Length: 204
Image (tube, rainbow, N blue to C red; front, side, top):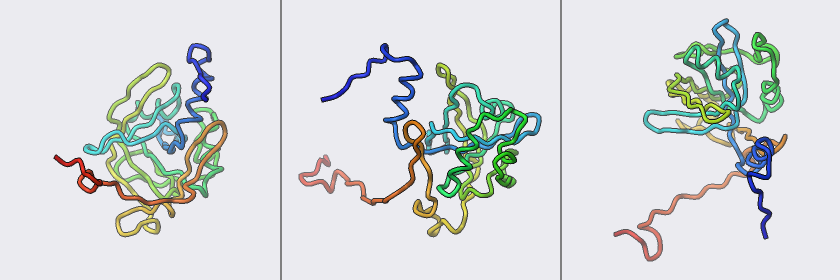
């Protein structure tokens, strides 16, 4: 048995809350940017993923017109920082609707770290920083999808196994429904099965 939710029977906000509760877990783009006036902004965006492999493009969605979007469209660059479990409260706090002339770095007590390829700062306390140049923006309804070409990745050495970041050491946070957040928890490994290895394989 299922319960049906007809889109026309719900408000846009109610349907948005429903989607947020079933499209889970969602990784978080902790986006640092700098305004034209020189104010460093930092905000979490939980509609975030990889959009392209070559060129390496990541994307996040700004729900409404927020400081991150305005800054990126003005300066053409930004940094996506990973949100680790030990910074749970600070990540949440940077979602506060501070005035545009207030830097979340200062309000929350985080440290700026210069990026190597873009003007926007990195979060020093975060183990991963992806420095991005704006590729394009795509308005969709009341949202804007921001695509950034990754120019440089800076990863804390102590979370690496050779050149591979270990998720158990990154301890990334994710967003769930309502005010709920997720952690990596128990991690399982399984290799993808090639068609040629499948019993009665399908290779032609």
